[in-house]
Image 1 (cartoon, rainbow, N blue to C red):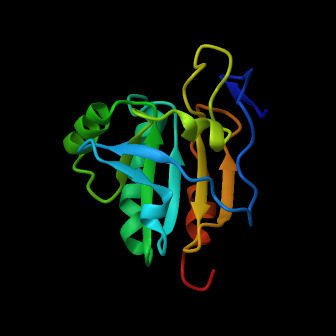
Image 2 (image 1 turned 135 degrees about the vertical axis):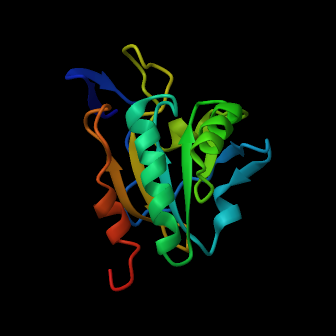
Image 3 (image 1 turned 120 degrees about the vertical axis):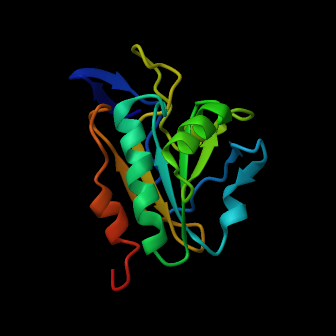
Length: 169
């Protein structure tokens, strides 16, 4: 269990993010076209998991916009933006914003992602949603970076996550 805060009030997640160097847990998530994807679908690519509570909040939306603006500058990388939102909400937001470079994904059909990555919030007003976190996975499926954002209303450290994927990192 990890303690984070929501406007300064402690809340908890179901576990902890996977350790750097560990194999990233597989998952089944649903894209906006209602097709399912797993981590194995991206084997051979570097994967950024931008994890957040809801696309319909300001900070979550900002993180999706930021990774969308950065992902095509990274070689052999994809960014999956994961939340419990329905694929339709992801499609609506990304369509309205013209965001086509990130891959929005939902826990629509399988709720193991939040548990396997230790990011499901287990108490407080956001219980059941995913906490804000970033996990970077290398081409072999190993975790190479992780950040559990300590205050749910704060943005992740984009530069730290992106730095590890830039040439010469």
